Image 1 (cartoon, rainbow, N blue to C red):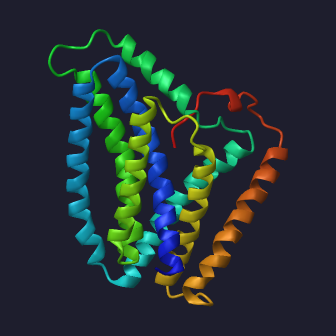
Image 2: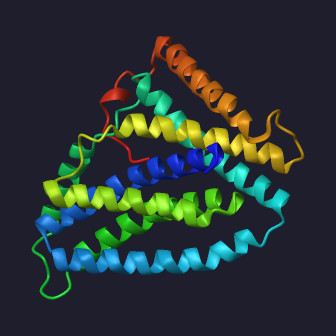
Length: 255
């Protein structure tokens, strides 16, 4: 396995683990307070729809010419990665609330309790919330797997990394019967933002005709460079006076 393959697998694993933790929190909340059966049906329906989406988009991506694929994938990853990185920098600088899985879990619990008594048979609230949570977080997993995998013609490797991440998160959730609040999710998001931004820059430039010195080995310089830039941004932003001093205390926003 090459260094690029290892980096691909690591980036996919971390990103998908973050998404799986967030989906697990939602499912646990509605399952514990309302209906496990309806929540699991919602999860199953989301997985079926995600599988169909993957089956439809996978061949379409791999059929693109390599340079066009790298420009498209690089641009998407760069936009996606910069969004993650921006939020991670703001969190690290104290200008945005840290992602608090325990707090989100309590919010979901309160919302589920306020929705009234579960309906007999299929509980629409549990089904809808579980379906929406798994499908929306799963779409990001599908996006990451397809873009990374199709660009390197290693969809199998990307899918395996995603599968391992999801299975580990689900097993951990079953073992402790609680949201994974102790997972260093904010640090993981920072790392994922760096990785997605680096790979997006690398592949987008390659697709546009640029030649990186050392080919794939350039990633060994590019990834640390993006990390240093992000850490410098944290230091600079944290010194700026905030015009909205209450931002750090606002409710955590899913990313």
